[in-house]
Image 1: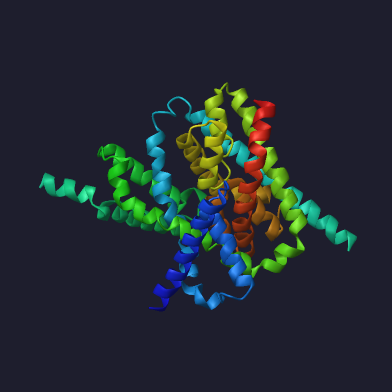
Image 2: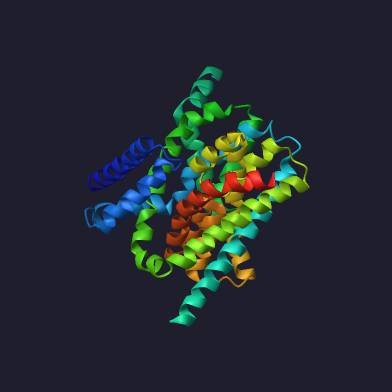
Length: 118
Length: 234
């Protein structure tokens, strides 16, 4: 029962996020708005972590499972991607490496600079 | 007998059943080998695609059950606020390095994608579809649509990128001596959205929290940067 209530709380925040998305008409998906909303609720103390913790631990632990159908959806792109697989794969991998390196090094350099000023 | 099998395939039980069983098999293989290429999601995806193709089952039939699993993507994204809440002071302390890193990293990503698309001689339709490949699916689809791309290609590129992030993200960090927990998390989340975050959560609580945070910020940054850079470079 406790878990059902927890899940209901999380679902309500999802719905609120989607409603906010429709209302604000911004290109930010409802689930991301819901995430910000949940963060605000936790920070202001309106929602206590203990009120959602069990279900959130469960969802976080099995996070990648929920992406299976989206990943399998790749199958519907087979015809469009014919002959372009290698390029797509190459660009995806190389740009991922570039973003990881540039982002990671920038964060680290800026953090070190901040520390050295202090 | 055939009718029975066909009705089973068309019922949600089929999609949910093969998703759980292939993911379980993938998890066992991963536990045995500990190789990043034995990622449960990747293995599960490959097994299901192989099964659907070889038995000529349509994606729609699989998705009768699949949609019930996809339903949890919303709550799963919302819940990323929890690790972030636990690490909020770390975020506040490093807000400028974090935002700066995500901004510069996202811009470098978009520029590199456009240049590589040109290098491969891909047409503009494919190029603009590839640009938002490092952000979370719902934001990516929206950006792709706005740029005049094909959302289904965007989704394919997003999935590729996510899996690339899971497979090589931590290794690239090690290779380039990116060892700070905050930097690793932000780098993985910025480069490979929620899929990469599943890996970051596995590495550690701080990494997971920062990766989850980066999904939202990288998405927002890309919304503004993508049309600008596309106009400039394409």
